[in-house]
Image 1 (cartoon, rainbow, N blue to C red):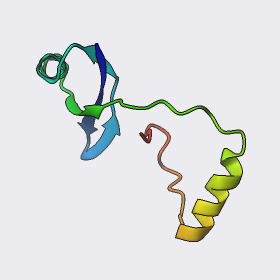
Image 2 (cartoon, rainbow, N blue to C red):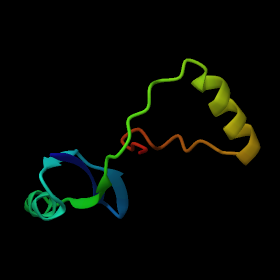
Image 3 (spheres, rainbow, N blue to C red):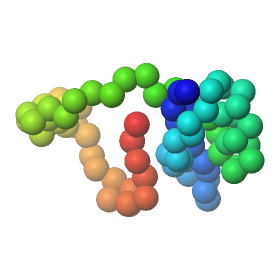
Image 4 (tube, rainbow, N blue to C red):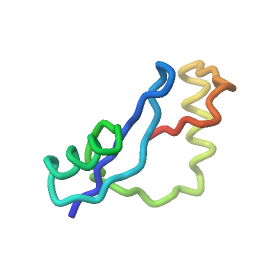
Length: 78
């Protein structure tokens, strides 16, 4: 059994959808199609939460001059 990541579109914007647990890509795609979702990938790694992650994220934000979009309350990032 694998975990498949999905997306869906709403009003022209793409959002992360629910995860699908399935034996293979074909089965995951069939389930996704039934629910109006698109399979976007397979979950391959789970990383332990790093307590210093905020420091690392601050570095990334500064290095890339990232500007936060305040209108992202319903979006998730994989």
